[in-house]
Image (tube, rainbow, N blue to C red; front, side):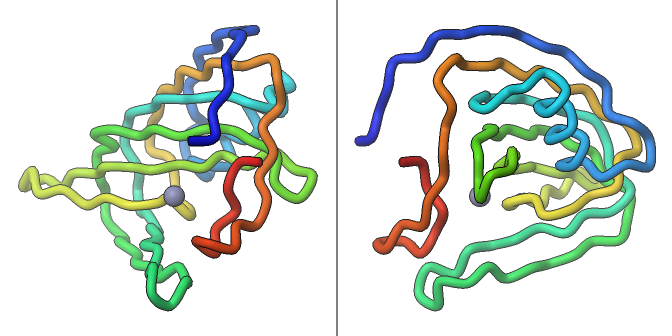
Length: 139
Ligand code: ZN
């Protein structure tokens, strides 16, 4: 376990702009408040989504897209620095009209409406390539 004690420096609430990209909105929110380490929760609805699934054997993300209105039943993620920019690592559980769910690592989604709670921490989080997984993990 690579752990640390946290000092919370701020709590922010925001609503995402209709038609914007979901993850870009969260990253812009982190930029606005200069959050270099944070945790967030969000919910709402999107007009489409592109999710990624990490293939642990091939060490590649596989993408799957859904061009339909979906509820964001749950969205959780964190903010860290990756290659000198703030990156919102974002996971989502989405639901269709039938109640059937879809889930994964978010690449892009067009916001219909969304609400986000971002908690900021004092010490910046940095991501760097990890040999064991092939992923960019926290230092
Ligand atoms: Zn992920």
